[in-house]
Length: 255
Image (cartoon, rainbow, N blue to C red; front, top):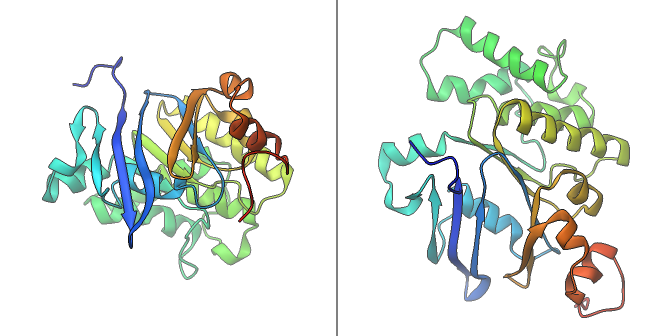
């Protein structure tokens, strides 16, 4: 059993090169159990690539990711797949299948990875839909839902297998401020109620300071700073301050 005091995920000297371009440059940090850990930074800074590497969907060029102390790259075959089932992913677009009902979308990962009775799977899916406030919408098709409701359906699918970690890729992208606040509160509620770890990629500053226990800022593929939300707010780094304030003048220049 892992030690509860140890990081649930440890990012160690990760580098990623795409077509000769260095996307991530020697990035290292730890994620603690039960926290909401936010990765922020401008477009093209490598934060979504970092998320996919942490989730096991993309292999780094060098470096390693430790999940519960085990090097993910050293785990192969069925054992690696079993490890990845401990992760849930909430995609920016929700990524729901339009021809399936909301409940059928949530059932997909359970059907794929278990041999449970269909009735039990349905009950599990409806339980998750209730957790995200979509009770009564199980039989709706995704096209019949608002953008915020589709996001919530995507969250229900992300927690369908009772993961230890849920990864969120821009969870409030394209939502109005009120719905953003609702989704942020839902992330907090799910993290606490289900006792999971949430890792969120976003550049929405209101969301960052609403949900984050700790924040990592990436800039030009490098880790600029890691700290609590308050420490990031009070940072003396001019790049951090320009980014969180959304100022035109500063070291960050538009190319």
